Amino acid sequence: MKVVGFAGFSGSGKTTLVEQLIPELRSRGLRVSVVKHAHHSFDIDHPGKDTYRHRTAGAFEVVVASSQRLALMREFEQPAELSVHHLLAELYDGVDWVLVEGFKDSDLLKVEVWRPAEPGQPPRPVRYPEDDFIAAIATTAPEALPVPTGLPCLDLNQPAQVADWLLAQAERFDYDWELHGER
Image (cartoon, rainbow, N blue to C red; front, side, top):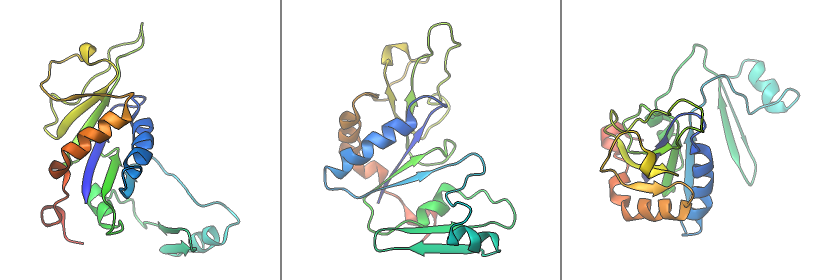
């Protein structure tokens, strides 16, 4: 399994890039999963649904499955911030690539997504000078990067180019279960 993170500040285009990379990688015959960090309370379940009723009745976990999908909802009795490695361990074994959005401080190799500020706005900061896990930068304006870099600059508007680069660098993104915990 290959794992790559996408990091960047809000509004940089991380979600759009990940959304575009999924079909790009799938068109090349690869199975793709996504791990996304949510910053606040979120809910995928809705009042009135059976699963919601079971969960609000006190179930620690509710698994709902059909012939087309499976969903697991787990309620934490106390706030728990799971690491990206815990979440990766929850994924299906047969996945080729995992695209991780968020978890910007993780020890995963990442592509930083960066756009210059709009005219009249303060400059947008970058992460790559302080983050040794940044492997490349996806940007619309490499010439506008505020800190010189020798890292590869990928065209944020060309997801096929980003996919090409990921596949060419695939060995770098092999996930090490021994380092991060066995399944």
